[in-house]
Length: 163
Image (cartoon, rainbow, N blue to C red; front, top):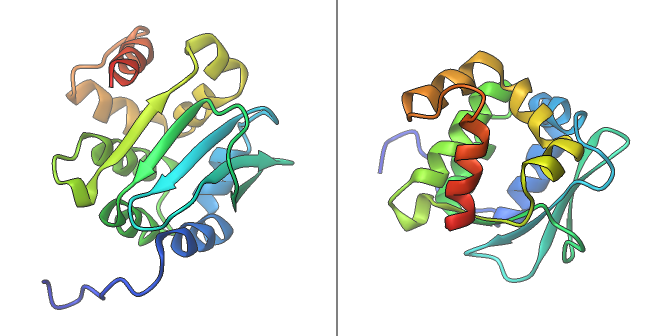
């Protein structure tokens, strides 16, 4: 273990709740979301269901099952620790970090995504606006992974639907 790494002493749900309360980037991203946008969230180290949604343009993370999620996330402790350790990151930096953890091979670092919505519904609910808020950083990172041009988002979504 690296010298400056603190042991994880807080539960993942507590870390995520604090992150959404303090991260300017999470507020900026949530401001793009429509009222119907919702994510189901589970943790590999904390039992129960959680949901993320936006209320009046502000991120809300709470215990409870998502009613009509656009996607479900299952977050491992390493992914939660990496993301919540970046409260001052911008939307692009967080977007890249999020995608890196989707692609992670180590199960302790993994974010699993189960997509329920297609491109039209994701666009109508504001998710493409969140991606756009990440700007050139996220687009550049996606291009490095072979996702280029107008079809990049649709291609990425089809990969997520396949699991």
